[in-house]
Structure formats: structure tokens, C-alpha cells
Length: 241
Image (cartoon, rainbow, N blue to C red):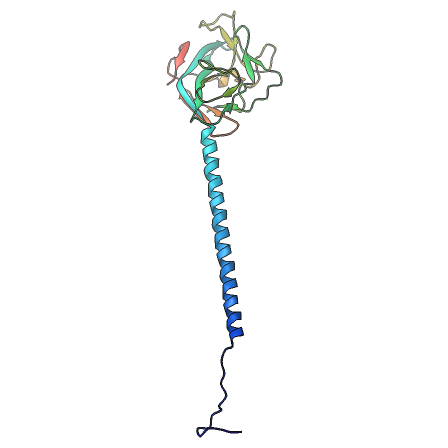
């Protein structure tokens, strides 16, 4: 009811200390939530990056590396009178001084050295496949030896070298043939076959100037591709560098 000479109230409006505290607490809570979100995202991203790095290192540490030449052996099929290669031999080692690689083979070389003998109940983890322009064989017979240092198991440890023999056909001794290796036979599952996973027809057998690829697929780590082209003349033993 009392007014100043200018006609204005004497009352004043402002912010109390409680309101200021509430606003400040709200800002602090929002900032804390935002900071926690940013930190959690950063930690998660760091963990994922670390897992990716370790996964890459594990793959490299459990990868195979070729050592030396790739040797192919020629034979003549007992049916069809066709010259071809019946086995390929190459040596591998660990790519780096890392994890041991399980090279338990599915086959052993027969007592007479004719053809591979299936190991009953073999728990092999490494698969070897074959590809050329005419065919793809997903699981070839193969056997293994460890030249030089060997601790008498089927694990390829750092410092060891494994010689892998991949069988494309059966060797048959005592059969007239053009080479000292004797004759060879397709792997068609007939009696006396060392396996059924190799060349099953002489019409698709690799010959002169044919390109082929053998892929070694270990249990873990990168696959090893060995790609070669046969020369224009097949010798009994060929070094395919």
C-alpha cells in the first residue's frame, strides 16, 4: 500500500542458495554421467583393440612357412599309359618362434613305400587340399617326417622342420612302367588303394605345363598355398622352385 515516488514496489526477487545448490548438483550429475560414458566407451574400445592385436599375433605365431624346394615325383598310370605326378614333397616350419602347430597326419607311408596307409582313428587337425583347372580335392592323403631335430611328437615346435608328403595317386611296385618309381594307380576305393581322396581318373591327372595349387590348412593360423606349374617335360624327380 506504500509506494515510492516513482510508483514501484520496494519488494526484491532473486535466487536462493538452495536453488543454486540444486542447479549445481544437476550440472555435476550430468557431467559425471557423460564422463562415465566416455570413459566406458574408451575402455571398451581399448579392450577390443587389444583383443584384435592378440588375435593377429596368435594367427601369425601359429602359421606355417615353406622351407626349401617343392619336389614332385613322376609315375605312369597302369591304366591309360599316362605320365603324371603321384606325390609332392615339401618342408615347412613355424613362421615365427611362436606356438606349436599340430601336424598329426592321417596317413603313414606303407611298409614297402608303395602307397599311404590310413592311420586308424587318426585325430588330424590339418587339412590339405588340391586344386587345378579340372578338379578340387578337399582332403588329400598326406604323411609326415621330421628331418633333423625332432622331439618325437607330431607337434611342429620352434626349431623343428616337417617334411610333408602329399599323395595324389597310389604307387604300385613290380609293374612295368617308364620310370624307376614303378607304376601308379588312381585312388578310386578299389582293393589295395592307400586312400580314396586323391586323383580318381587318369583324364584329370596333371600333366605337362599344368598349373596346380596345394593348400595346407592348419587348425589355427593362416593357410599355406603352394602353387606350381609342371614343366614341359616330366622327369622322374622334379625340383619345382
